[in-house]
Image 1 (cartoon, helix red, strand yellow):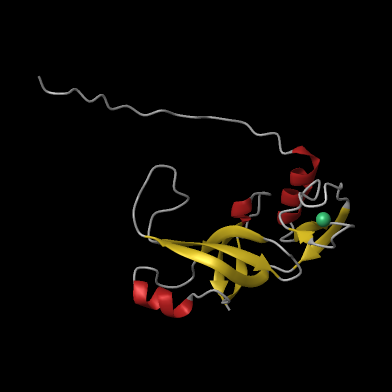
Image 2 (tube, helix red, strand yellow; image 1 turned 90 degrees about the vertical axis):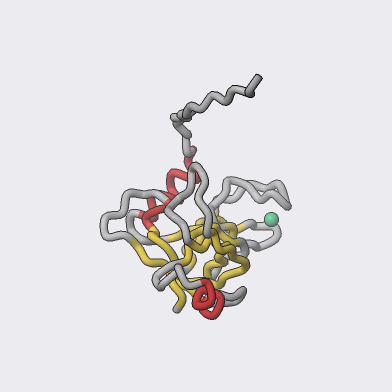
Length: 151
Ligand SMILES: [Zn+2]
């Protein structure tokens, strides 16, 4: 007997209460500003802003604006398709440490031909400087930054 395979799609609509810290963090995106919170104990500036320092277990209430330029800490080239991707491949996903921050945020790196892997490897390295390319019509989400482009 042939094995039967059932195919269907599962949808997962959800709502996420941002809370006061993430609400402010994303509200600043509307003005094309990126903020972190500084730990009074270890001095690190955490971006995205957080309510407490996971190392020191102290609450964070000092907001610090960081630049929308930074440095690639690590990156990967995505050339295959799967469900739930942020965009059609090929694309580059990277961890970017913004100037003034002690942590890195994940985002896309683009702004040039990503179909040529050799060009991508020539332009993107750990340590490459990048800057945010903001959308014209910001809405207060992480995608207000379309991507980061090499400087
Ligand atoms: Zn700390």
